[in-house]
Length: 285
Image (cartoon, rainbow, N blue to C red):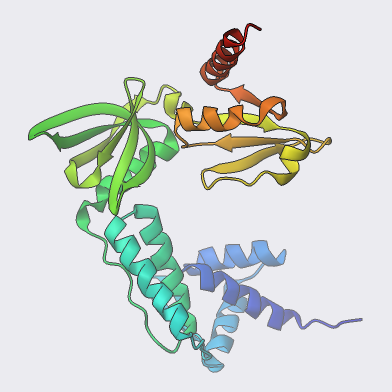
C-alpha cells in the first residue's frame, strides 16, 4: 500500500493554493482546511511556509497577504512560445478587452513564478473602467448609459449590453437598443456607466437554440459562437448559437432539412416557418 507523508502533502496543497492567488493567514488556514478536510492551525501553516522557504521557494508577506513570488525551478520557453506571448500581448493591448487583458496578466503572473525570465504585463489604461462597467452590467443584468460620438454629435443612450466585439482591429461594444442590435466602436465612446435599471431580458434575444438529429448531430462541427447545451439518448444534440447573423443562420439551418428544428426564440421559429411555407407555395404545395 502506498504510504503518504501527510505533512508533505499539506505543503504541496498549500503551494497549489498560493500559486493561484495571495492569501492572508486566516484565508490560507481556511482554504487549506477545506482542501485537506482537516483543521489547519496558524502554527501548522506557518511551519509549512517556513519549510517552503527553507527549500528555496520565495514566499513573502506583502500587504498582509502571503504571496508566492518565485519557485526555485524554471521553465525555458522556446522561441515560438515567446513569439506567441508577444503576439497575444500586442493583440490584447490593441483590443483592450478587459477580461482578456486581466486573464493574460494573470497567466503571465503564474509564468513569472516558474520562469527564469520576466515577462511584462499589459499596461491597462485608466479608461478601461468603461470596459469593467460594461462587463459588470452584462454579467449582472443591468442596463448601461453609453456616451459616444457619431457624425460629430454627442449621443447618450440607455441600452442592454450584449457583448464585446471588434470591427477589424478596433474594439467595439454590442448593445440592444430599442430592440435593435447596435455596434459602437470603443474609440467613439466617452463613457459607460452602469444604470440602476434592470435589463428587460432581451439581452438573449440574439441567442438561438436549435436541435439537430440523426447523422447530422454526429457529424456537425460547432461554429466559434456555438456550444452544445443538451444531448439526448438518441444522439440528437441541442445547440446554442449566440452571435451569428440572423439571415445567415436561418439560411444555413434551412439546408439541414428535417434533421434540424429551431427551438427558440419564437420569432426565429416563425420566420423559418414562413420561409418554408413561401418556398412550398412557389411550387404549388
